[in-house]
Length: 134
Image (cartoon, rainbow, N blue to C red; front, side):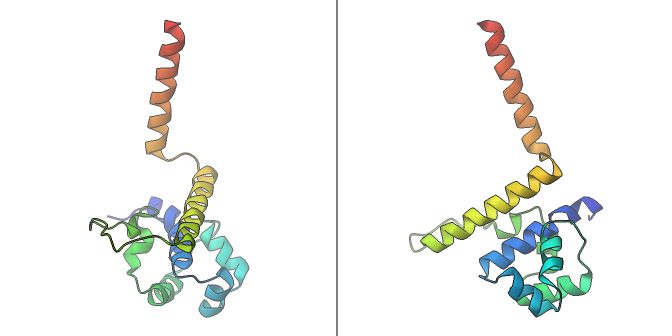
């Protein structure tokens, strides 16, 4: 089922697809017929993207529309175990780092993710117990 909270990760997923496809923000914006500033605002979650643009992007990235609404990064998960032939080049690692940084920035702007909040709360409680025991 969809709800409005699934819209918050659309921009991050667009940026991930764009980065993995080695397409600059300017190139994608030009291909979509929008400004680079508008593309930046979409990726940053400052504006919502319309269905027509999502359809065009799905065609460019050869993905499904649903992939844009998945939790950030989950559209790229695979259930296949890595094989020996799979390896990451320095360029791949750089792209992955950019994705992590973009996700981290978005999470900071939108607040801590619910799973992270519970982990932080657990860690805070453990720290308090350790201080009490000292």
